[in-house]
Length: 454
Image (cartoon, rainbow, N blue to C red; front, side, top):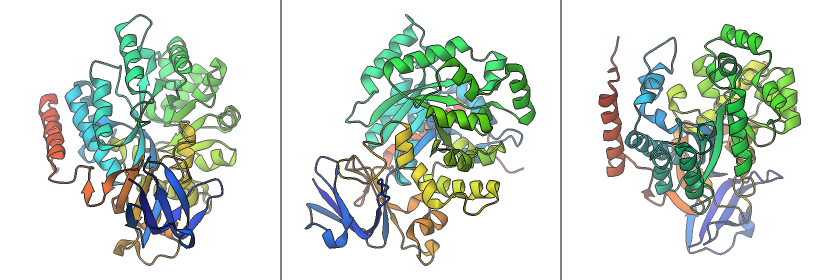
């Protein structure tokens, strides 16, 4: 059934960055975008209409670094000032498929209700029995578009892990009308390499599988592994090179690589990233909470490096609200550069939409509001007291608004939030309550410490 969204402030993110205010977006019965334009060219009402007067119409936001399982131990649950992620590290080995399924349901609910339509999850470990299904199925049931990054080095030739990996690709990669995809994941930072946590042979094996499957490869950067600058510098001295330089020397640094949790990129790293066409994923709130170095996104962008945004899960930043990430990206980059114009809100929005789609090879499908693309979009209400008086809708919203201002969210033309019916598991929803009960059961079984006021 077709849908006409009209009278909104439409930000297309197309090549010309066209904006229509007021404008319309036509969603076809096939779940794709039809016409987009100013209201003076608006077609007659479709089978369904949504009046977006006083609202911002955007491509669905894309979160390219997320961890489902952390929804069982968000930042407000952390106990160690020395390491904000200590509780999640302690709890992770206790996770079972039922726990992961509960976490994935809670994650999908929060992502959808804050305007995120596509997310890349980093899988918590080897592709064990039922674990991959538990990661994907809850989000799929809610209509979320997902990319699950698997540890490809865990699937050795002829092993049961390899067979599970092959079955996972058959079941999930590019299936469910393009809602589910797989990617590869490996650790290749200087600390892990120098300490023997991961070997060159394992990294090359993982990249070999990714190239064979023609999927993106997510590489965890040094900032995520370093406990401080001293640890990083010691690892660099021992290995003699950064992970970017090491990947280049191994011959695997190319447009299929996404570096996450980078932080420490020197001039040579930045130059290699630009030349190779590799992508960088920046999680500004998570980096700030962990107190590590700031990924020099403004400098990378000036060199032509494609950068996207993520949250890295709620254990660090406490939420997976991409509106919050866009605001933080602009604020932190401008602070580091000592220049209030180094990163605009509009540029950060590109990183959470069309640039993110390009990073995962889906820019022909999602990331902008253009005829023929999948109808992944989010409509945010600008008529709220906390948004003050609107002068520039985009910057006003991302500086003053929040993801929960979403009033309509579509994925592939399907309404996943709005029309009086939210599949995002609102309070009181039996599925949400079941997920919360399972989360509390996990705490008891894993013997996690109770939280109190000290």
